[in-house]
Structures are given as structure tokens and as C-alpha cells.
Length: 165
Ligand SMILES: Cc1cc2nc3c(=O)[nH]c(=O)nc-3n(C[C@H](O)[C@H](O)[C@H](O)COP(=O)(O)O)c2cc1C
Image 1 (cartoon, protein in one colour):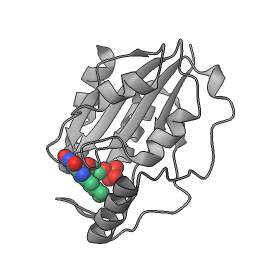
Image 2 (cartoon, rainbow, N blue to C red):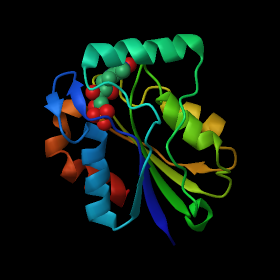
Image 3 (cartoon, rainbow, N blue to C red):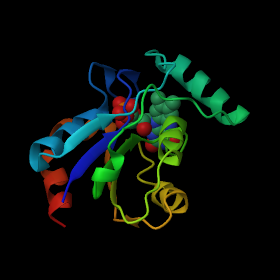
């Protein structure tokens, strides 16, 4: 069984955590990597999001309002080889960020097992697992993991607990 962690995360100024060098979701992705040895792939938008928080809020709101689908720098060539995908994202505006939606739309998830994980500042997983189920026809989407971005540094044991379920 082959596993991969696919995630998006934005380093920079953020709510409750100051200015991060490694984004909160990436911290969780790194724990999963340590605990499972799975491969890893980072989703990178063609136009990087601003490190400045207010600027990022403005840009992402505009993308949502205009119904844009921000492009990603590259796709994963050997996607078909993987059975299990750990899919990680920050909650943006209560949703999965649009560049992640774009990445997902590129693939057929039928027959894959998907384990979602997110970081947020109060939202929890919200409706994102429901959204993923609508987008990934035929995938077995497991219960997701969520943690506040400001608590990721102490979350390794929680991640381990989730992985054991
Ligand atoms: C543009 C933007 C929108 C956000 N919207 C939400 C939200 O709707 N609900 C929430 O709980 N947190 C929201 N947050 C907080 C992030 O989900 C949280 O800081 C997360 O840990 C960031 O992960 P990252 O460092 O991996 O990008 C938002 C942050 C940004 C930058």
C-alpha cells in the first residue's frame, strides 16, 4: 500500500501565530511524514499568496467573489500509484482553499482512501469533508483531523492518535 501526504500551507503572517516560517498545516504534514514515512507533495499556487495577513485576506476574498480557480505550479505525475492520500489544508473562509480545489479537480479519486486534515482558528473541519465527498467521486473519505493553527507545536500526539484510528 502506497501513501502520500498532499497539502497546501502558507507561511507568513497569520492569525494568532505571528509570522511563521513553516505554515501551520505544513507542521502537521511533517508530523504525518515522521509517523508514517509516506511520500509528500506540496501544492504551490502559481501566484504565491501575500505573507501579509490583511493582504492575503483581501486577495483570497477577491478570488472567492470572482469565482477564480487559482492555478498550481505543478501536478503530481504518479498520482495513480497511491492508494491512500493524506490531504491537508488550512481553512480559508470556511472552505478548502481554491488552489486545493483546483488540484483535486485534476484527478480521479475513485478507489482511493482519503484522510483529510486541516488547521484553522475556530472553524474546525466545518463543511470541508462534505465538500471533498462531493468532489471526489468513488473515494473512501475517512474522518478528518483538525487542530487550531496556534496549537500545532503541541499536536504531534493528537496526530498520532488520529493515525491509529
Ligand atoms: C485568507 C485566510 C482565511 C482564513 N479563514 C479562516 C476561516 O474561515 N476559519 C478559520 O477558523 N480560520 C481561518 N483562517 C485561519 C487559518 O485557517 C489558520 O491560521 C491556519 O492554521 C493557517 O494554516 P497555514 O499556516 O498552513 O496556511 C484563515 C486564514 C487566512 C490567511
